[in-house]
Image 1 (cartoon, protein in one colour):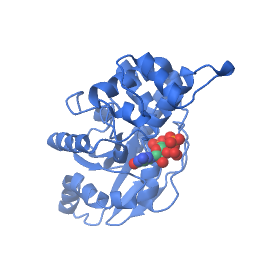
Image 2 (tube, helix red, strand yellow; image 1 turned 120 degrees about the vertical axis):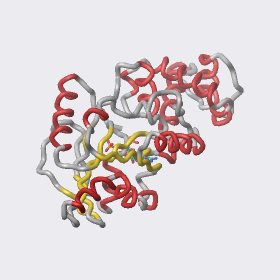
Image 3 (cartoon, rainbow, N blue to C red; image 1 turned 90 degrees about the horizontal axis):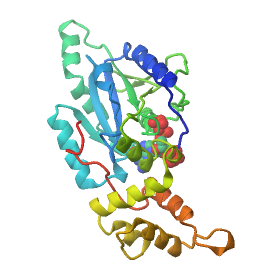
Image 4 (spheres, rainbow, N blue to C red; image 1 turned 180 degrees about the vertical axis):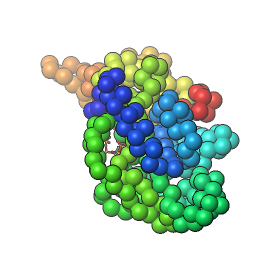
Length: 285
Ligand code: G4P
């Protein structure tokens, strides 16, 4: 979990860095979190990425609802995007990446051919918000542990390229995009999934919102997981988690705080099950 805090200065730096790096590439491989594909994307990518081919990777698909994953795949494809659902930690999930890059860059490849640059490599960069899995993706694609980078925007290093099969060159430093914090609901979704620090928001409120969201979209799932009886009252729900998990504080009193911590952490780590917090139609792509 990274601890990056975004301030206007960081965002300006990250944007400048991204604009510099973009000059070097033909293709942006944009990573989004499959559990929140709209909230985990950056609002400026459309403008930043103008004129570049784009491939969208819905990452952490292993933690998201399979039926909703398929719906997102269709929705993005309908918008004309090339898309991949992936668990970036698994090499086998990224087997199709070469073919998809070729597909996303078809126009560029054909233009290169027409101009006589038959073997010109396609250059690509990975971009996405912190913690979405950029380094994991690069490491898996590259097949070695080479992409460990700090998450601090503006850290400059010599540009390194990872040479892949079929004339593909991947920039080994990912572009760091900032999330859209202005929308409080987006902030909540990012905190629930662990893209931003939970303590940025009020944790009690976040837990209550999560319980409500789960009860609306996945009725019974949280109660089953915690082996407690369902209740409409989120405070009572947390109390019950505290009881079954023996959350006690000083003086042997039940600690709802500890229950909140457990709930948020277990949800973030996917222990509760495969859950998607956004569906196509909830938000614009
Ligand atoms: P970043 O470069 O975009 O900041 O993300 P990074 O690759 O560091 O990945 C962040 C965390 O997400 C890592 O967990 C990583 O293992 C996990 N991750 C990346 N891709 C996937 C995926 O497709 N599926 C799942 N389930 N996890 C993925 P970590 O090091 O344990 O960090 P954390 O859990 O403390 O956040």
